Amino acid sequence: MNPPGTVAGAERRKQTSEPLTVAQPFLIQQQWDAYTAEQHAVWAELVRRRMPQLREHAAEEYLNGFEQIGLREDSIPNLADVNRRLAPRTGWNATPVSGFLPPDAFFEMLGARQFPTTTYIRSRESMEYTPEPDIFHDVFGHVPMHAHPVFADFLQHYGRVCAGLMQDKDKLERMGRLFWFTVEFGVIRQKGRVKLYGSGLISSHGEGTHVIEGKPEIREFNLDQVMDQKFLVSEEQKVLYAVESFDEIYEAAQEAEKRLS
Ligand SMILES: [Fe+2]
Image (cartoon, rainbow, N blue to C red; front, side, top):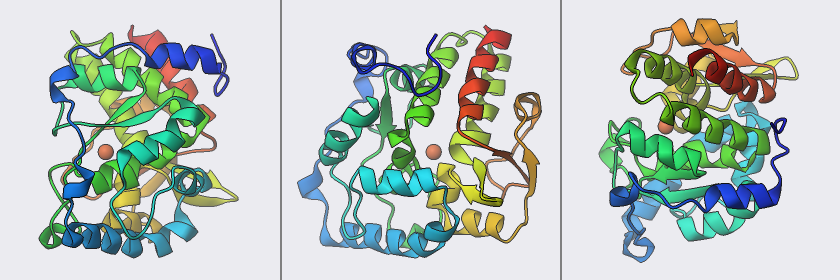
């Protein structure tokens, strides 16, 4: 087994070359030229609203990833350009899909280092919150972290473990909580301060501000507690779990596999 961050390039390429099967019907092309000036303007406004807070309060790995994959403030990303920068780093791609995926397709894609990415962007009427996933949440919120080697390995492993648990609803629910309190609402302590890395905190001004204002209880990351911790999607989070390094979530996915498989 490779320790975090040491999967060799050749092995990575082999891992990503597996063709998708259950996810295949959901794959689409991004029609980048079809975005309107108004849609680019919505992206620009969303990014400009978030960046001042994130420059101060986001994990440095998120901010580095944002630069490394070439995201811009002024226009919706072209996923082909993002992938040209991202794939050589960690083997991950942001792969366009038609919308919500069923769990088996979602986990299959994570296991193949392909992040299911919607191409639609929210309208100006739902700048703060959109119930449907959109490209702002998926790319601005998620994809920069995929440039980080340890996070990249964690997320693939997470997908593979879940793909092996498809028949067990209870175990999948426990794994879903691990996803929620890391990938979606994760925080990390850096230089004594709580920094954001979860996509739900990165992409939502309200959720990010809620954490910065110290409203949720921040507990030390603990796999057992996380897997027992119920949450409501519809409410601001009352408790979050802080890691000290991304090695912790990589190890948590390994440990979860041992306990649940
Ligand atoms: Fe998300």
